[in-house]
Structures are given as C-alpha cells and as structure tokens.
Image: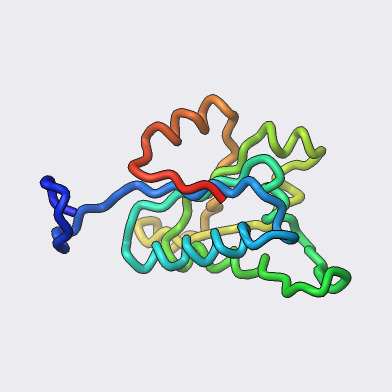
Length: 144
C-alpha cells in the first residue's frame, strides 16, 4: 500500500508477527498459521513468528502423531529458514511453566549470506516484557 492507503506495488515492507498460542494438534490453528507464514514469506514481508502458551509444543522434538491419526507437520518448521524467516521468538515463561527448555525444541536455523553462509539459530528466547515490546513494533499481529 502507498502512503494514501492504496494498493500499488511500491515495495513497502510491513512487519508481520504471527503468534502461535495453541497446541499443535486437536485444532487447525497451528497448521493454518504455518501455511499463512509460508505464504507471507513469498511476498517478502518482515516476518516474525512467536510461540507462547501451549504454542511452544508446536516446536517440540520427536513429535509422534501416529496415535492420534494426524499427519505430523512439525518437520515443515525446518523450512522457515529457507524462506528467510529467522525471527522466531519463544516466550521464556511459557517454556518454564511447562517444564521445558530450548533443548526440548527443534533446532531451527538459517544461513547468513553476509557471514559466509554461516548457519545460525533462528530461535530467540524472550521474556514476556521483551515480547510485549516486540509486539508493539509490528504493523500487523495475527494470533493463532
């Protein structure tokens, strides 16, 4: 959109934050969020993804969905770095309240072309106060 609010490919980049607060299975929220994030990446926007509350379970290592008869989509999170999505925030308090740590989550990485393609972690552990400040910086926040 241009300054007048009209559409028109002027290359304006917006800051989008996708908040994931639900467990990965039992509802469509987690999968829908992942799909929307990947679609948004195609439009070259500034994307941040947050995992808070039960949403932290979406990134758990070793998910086995055979018993619930659903496809395990958690390996798809590893592709986020390929789409230049490397601002993935994990709310510290949500992990702690569930007895989890970053070691319980998948390692999500991206390759930094400005640093000789060095592989770097996409996960950023933040407290609630820091997360609130990040939310305030966004143009658009979508909660799933």
